[in-house]
Image (cartoon, rainbow, N blue to C red; front, side, top):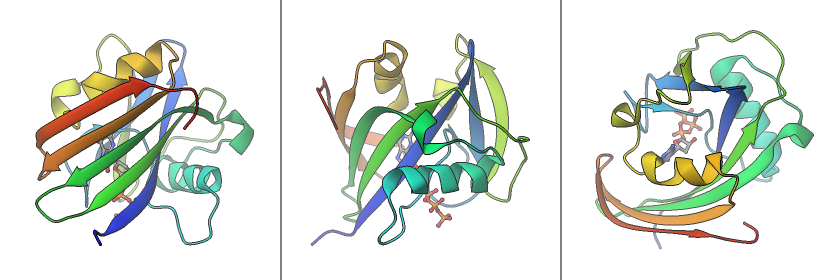
Length: 158
Ligand SMILES: Nc1nc2c([nH]c(=O)n2[C@H]2C[C@H](O)[C@@H](COP(=O)(O)OP(=O)(O)OP(=O)(O)O)O2)c(=O)[nH]1
């Protein structure tokens, strides 16, 4: 059995801007990303998304303000890790954005998203998020930078 992790990812939007954080440690270090992390045993996925957003950005959202945008499954062939990521978006948020030990947040215009400093698959599924098409993706990676396989489809639910 491969090692399996269930994770969340929250994309915060403010009109034509998106809030990304530069990951300072762990998986995806050095890449800009939305905010998220591992779901704890027994934790409801949206509650985990709210908790991780707060821990990594300082922002609060209500679970009812999280909209599903898709689900991604990553298989890392180099170590057997499988990560399932539930992706959400939110535009209603409150609180102060803070830099944390894990993330350095910064607003980007949606026309200037730094895809070349992000996970390489993000450029493939962000368009689904922008056009509000619910998606499912399956990707195989060798390490954090080499994508070996990619499959993306619009789905009815995730
Ligand atoms: N945008 C994007 N995000 C990804 C990809 N792959 C991947 O794991 N992620 C996300 C899902 C999670 O939000 C995050 C990994 O979670 P994490 O290791 O930071 O979890 P954590 O915060 O619980 O970690 P830690 O406290 O133990 O350091 O990276 C990808 O290809 N693209």
